Length: 352
Ligand code: PMP
Image 1 (cartoon, rainbow, N blue to C red):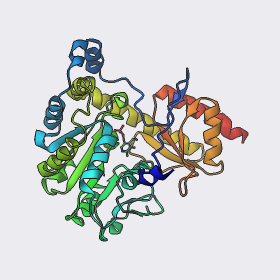
Image 2 (image 1 turned 180 degrees about the horizontal axis):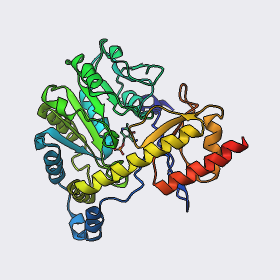
Image 3 (image 1 turned 180 degrees about the vertical axis):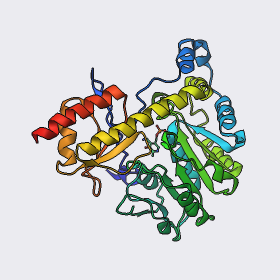
């Protein structure tokens, strides 16, 4: 059909599956196993539905204000979106318009190349080293922008702030985006670097450490000028992106710092003991600082373990992709969920 010549054709991102089975153990999309903060639950139950007649605040002002106070920056340095995917998509559109390719790691969040293709942004991937680390030297070549997650996904590996700074320092003429979706599980945020670098944009999310993936809240913090440009693009696209319930409940989540610290500490504690148990079962993995572990087994192929787990309604993530097709990404769930996983693996690995 002739009209197809004018279609913007894209190969979409494939998100982890969302099965809905009773008694399943869902460790495949890095969600938080604990409920949102009590204040969020209470506010949700008291929500005034009459307000839903009205458009929500297009600037998401109360949530921007709450985040600015929490992170000790000005509201004009904060941009909020519908999940960090929305923030990242806007940032690609706004900042990556050069002729040179943008750079990101070869093993990383698999949405980056999808947005690059969607917007026709040229890109080049830089191979992680044999220990899955980013080599900052790779980011010292001509480019139209840089993006990487820290900790990286799906490896879970955190780069030192000195490495992050080295990359920003070497790229003062383009925007450098640090995707900190998993920073709250033991990483050191690049936020203090904002004072020195006007080309740095830090993206975070409520989906993992704040237990609110279902509400779709993400945000970024950067120099006021970067945020202004992002807002210009957003208001040229869709003014009312974030719905009212997400705005209200997002503010409640930010208010409860004690709960946030409690659940992120619990997840880290579980992660550390699960690392020991997985190592005893013959798994190897980079030393994750995220809410997941990226494992390979010394003798059993990842795909077989993935399928065996699935038959037990234990869902983990597997990609049939070069370089990572012998790895599984296992989200850290509750202690009970992780006990079930380990118990099953013990029995299964004895049999194979
Ligand atoms: N960045 C990374 C590295 C991720 O793994 C994810 C989760 N898929 C996101 C961003 C997006 O998360 P959300 O849109 O739920 O904020």
